[in-house]
Image 1 (cartoon, rainbow, N blue to C red):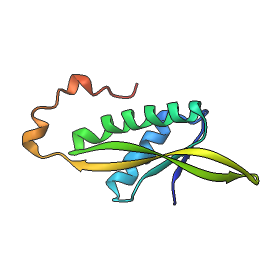
Image 2: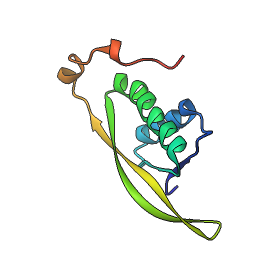
Image 3: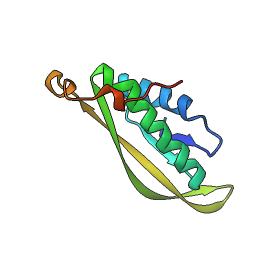
Length: 105
C-alpha cells in the first residue's frame, strides 16, 4: 500500500488502528489527505495512535509535505503525513506521564 487515504468522513479511531498495526508490523506509514477536514481527521488519528503505541514501547511523530495528485483527471494539492517511528527505551518510558496519553473511549 502506497499510503493511507483519509477523508473528512474517516473515523480517527479506525485510522489510528491501521497506523498502529502498520507500525507494529514494520510497514512504512504515509497518510494522504485532501482538504482541511481530512487533515483534521488524520491528525486526530496520529494522536490516538500514539496512545495505542506508547505503552508498547513505540512512539510516532509526523512530518507534512505537499503533494500534487490527480483526482478524476484534475490536479489537486494533497498533504501527505510521513509517520516516523521511535522506539522508547525503558528509562524514557518511566518519564512518560500516562495521564497525558488518553485511551480511546
